[in-house]
Length: 162
Image (cartoon, rainbow, N blue to C red; front, side, top):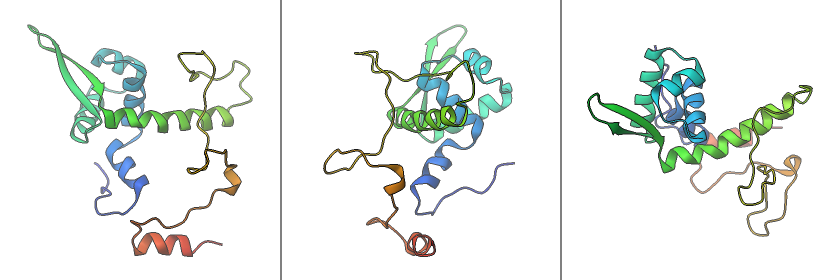
């Protein structure tokens, strides 16, 4: 049984979470972003049941994150590819990888996935920067402020913190 959706919430985080759906869908999106497109490959990579995989792929299609494309006729076979909206989740995936790697620094075998600049081969990471100057900003100096689209609840959240 699915939980209540996030419709009507004025929250960018809720919008992304609502589009993704759940942890299985995020792992499926991970694989789509990494280039896996076939149903059997997605099932093997995630270990998810066929029923759950089918359900999550339909959800990702409905939410505009993935597109189903036919690649064979008789028998009909389809592949799944991320849409532009789905590829945007690559940033979220990279952020999650960076956090997971930080949490697992004690693992002597090193990180399981690296992101590199395909031109130079150098490792890349997400980092906060000042929008106007491009200068790096330390995480401890970042504070949330209401944006132009903030509703009363968002303003309340921000006003009720120490």
